[in-house]
Each structure stands twice: as structure tokens, then as C-alpha cells.
Length: 432
Ligand code: BGC
Image (cartoon, rainbow, N blue to C red; front, side):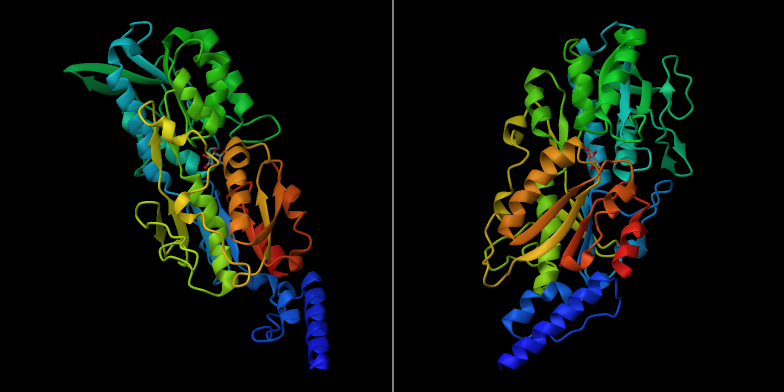
């Protein structure tokens, strides 16, 4: 018996060192039903290419066409994407802004020129969440221009005269009266080093816009709260111009009391759970829906169609969005609070601790660092996952992939790419 334990442990060590050297020899097998000692070394017993992998927040896709990268999404049998329903959320954001305008029609046109002017902060022109939000705002406000069957999502630069071709002047009818709506300006908020969704850039942009046509700006729309809050603090709070973001970060929700127009919750509490849950299920060798559409042994369960949707062809779980406005913001004040229906601790005996490598594309991203990661850090305890968090610089993929030097030391991976086209930079390391 002792000899068997020793031999199994030796085999495990050998397998671990093979995996660390990048062997692609496949699973060495034999760990199931073997001794506890062997099971503890499980991270060394399967090839990195066979370990559970979840992409999150940045869906593997072509950054120009939006086409999903199905090779990355089908990397192995335990590969999934976790994000949120970008189109449903984008429609919600557009509608929220339109309804605000309708409700405040008597006061919204600050200079009384008959044109309701808005400016738009774009996060990343190659990120499908950002593209969807730009489209959602333009669609609801009537400023969208279709191109090959899809709404043009390009930034217009400055368009105070309404001559831009990527958008058109829209119309809103309230109480039998028609108002013109114009996208006065829009820009991708990318800093000189290349970081996108850049809040500081948005704060500077609103300053520039306001100094040349500030009295024409009646509404501010932003692809996210990081940029929205930067614009709010730099200009729109003092000038009482309603500003709308996305993410429901705690600071943005609190600012609704001070005139921030509203935001969208992308249900980060559900996404963070799903991100780690699909890994936990694969590591436990149970059905992927355990603790998701069906209750687990601790009672955790989500409601499909209410909390999230699953698209099997896309191997993707999408959390559903909720609008957060002056009417309901009190329910959303803490964006880092875990979701009650999935807050039960898993039993360590039945779900032994496993090691996960997880990266955040940009440690300075407002949403990921102030909302998503704090949620992950609570769920990792509940799910008995020992997660190593790696923070990127938001600009270079290699800054992150360089820190995936020893994949053999982990049981599973959670990846948030800098660029949605770059999945292969990670899968090639795992396939070595
Ligand atoms: C969030 C943004 C964030 C981006 C990062 C989006 O879903 O809304 O705030 O910057 O993800 O990829």
C-alpha cells in the first residue's frame, strides 16, 4: 500500500514537471479513485490544454466585424464565455436616456435652440460591448445610420452643425411637439499609451467640448460609468447636465442623488459568480448547470431567463441587465454585494480547494477593479477556489501572458483579454 502511494505520488510529480515543461502528452489519467495524495497533485495530472477555461468580460471575437472566435470558445470541452447580454443592455441604456428626455422636456434644452444636443464617450471601438452601447443610444435617440444592415458605431469627432455622416439628426416627439436630437460630438476615449475606456481622457474631452459649445450640451451619454463619472466630476455636475453611464459602479449609483442621470447594472454579481462557477463545476466533473439552473448541494441556484441567459452555440452565459435610475437606485448602492441566491458556502470535503489563474486586462479599469474583482474575491472563498489575480496594464497582451509562465501550477484559467482578437496568445501557451 505504502509503495503504491509512493509510486502514484512519483507519477504525479513527473506529470507535473512534464506539464510545467510544456508537454502536451495529454492526461496521464489514473487520478480518479486513486489515493488522496495523488488527488492533491491533480493539477499536474491533466495537460493544460484540457483544463477548464473561462473567458470573461471580453468575448473572443473579431474586433472589426464582431464575429465570434469559435475556435477560442471551443478550446476544449470545458471552455465557456461569461459576460452579459450586450444588446439587451444597450437597448435599456438608450431607452433610459430617451425616457429621461421625454420626462424633462420642459427643462432639457438648456439654450432653448430647439435642438437637444448630446455628447457620447465611446470606450473601445473594437469591443463588442462598447459597439452595442453606442448603437443602443443612437437607435433610441433616432440618430442611428445603418450601414450594411447594422448601425454605424464610429465616433463622429465634432458634429455641432449636424453634417456628420456616421449619424443623422434624430427627432423625438413629446406632447405632440417634435424636437431635434443631435449627437454634437463623440470620441473613443483612448489615452496616448493605448489604454481604452480611459476615464481621464473622457474628463479632458468634456472640458474641450464644453469650452467650445458647452451651452448646446443637454445630455451626456457614456459607454461606461468610469468615463461618465469623470465627465460628471469635471463638468456636468456643476452644470446640471444629466449624465448616463453603464455598470452601476457604487460611486455612479451614489451620484444619482446629485444629478447623475442613471446607469445600467450588468449584474456583475451574477457574472462574477458564473465566471468561477463554470470552473468549479468542470473541476468537480459535474453538469455545467450545477448551482446555475439547478440547485447545488448548498442550495445555490440562479433563474434562467431572469438572472442570465445561456446560448449553447456560443458557449456563452450572458447576465441580464437592469436600469438604475432615480426611481430605484437605493437598491443598488453597493455594487460589490454578492447575489443572495448564490451566496452559500460549498463544503470543502466535497469540493476540495483548487487553484485558478485569473487575469484582469487592466488593473486600472473602474468596473473590473471596483466592482467585478471584489465580487470574485468573495465568491472564490464560497466556491473553495484559490485564485491568483493578475492585473494587466490595459495595453499589451504580453504584459499578462508573460505572467502565465507556469500554467501547470493551476487547475483552471479565467481570462480577460486586452484585445478581443487575442485569444490565441493564451491558448497557444496552454497548448504547448
Ligand atoms: C464595462 C466597462 C469596462 C469593460 C472592460 C465593460 O463591460 O462596462 O466599464 O471598461 O467592460 O472590458
